[in-house]
Length: 291
Image (cartoon, rainbow, N blue to C red; front, side, top):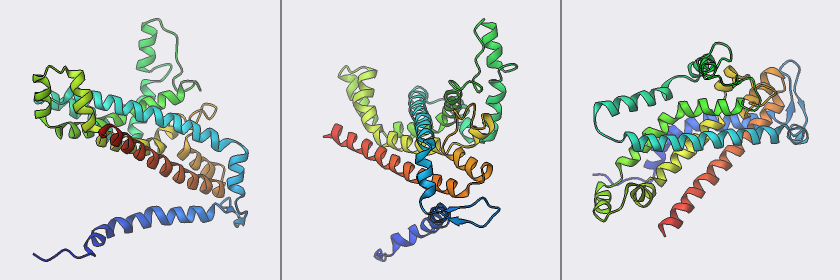
């Protein structure tokens, strides 16, 4: 067998590096360049330097969009992780019935965002939706899930959690299969109950899995666009204008490409920073608990 060459890792990484360069770093570089110009796609661009970034900070819109997106992401990440872990613990059993239930739950994840958004728009329709009919049958007040600024963002977060929970469940199921059964059997013989076994055996073993689910769920929630565009259009009163939709709005509705590019750069930096902080926090917690 030939000895491994120092170039072999780079050869294996090559295709991924090429794809990332073409579809991530090059577009990001172009966005950073265009953020220095004022351009409406109709007239020649005008160089304005950092004015687009200054404008984002001066009008306070960036702070509101970032805070709204962070709140939405916090709901999606915590909700999908909690439900995914709970369902994984509940359905980690042999048999066709449990396999069928797992398949049904995961099927929501593979359905397109457009179909999910249209489905929930019909269900949540304030006049003809199934949810509205249930509220009327229970003599409860009418709720404008998508028309009330106080509930619209929570509704979108709930729809997103419903869609991505199946993914979190499958990943947690894979993590549960890696936990040695012998540890649970030994703890049971020592008299440890189910909650104690979960706290001291299952959860420490699932920390890397939980970190992965949290990071991927954060990225998915920060990329929310279809569900916003179809269900609310950023309204009511901009209550659901999240980061990606704000970029779309600036570029294709307000025709301010420079401002949209500046938002894109800030979006990339914020998402990267959040992912790094989240991963380091999970790793530090794992080291602390492990030590």
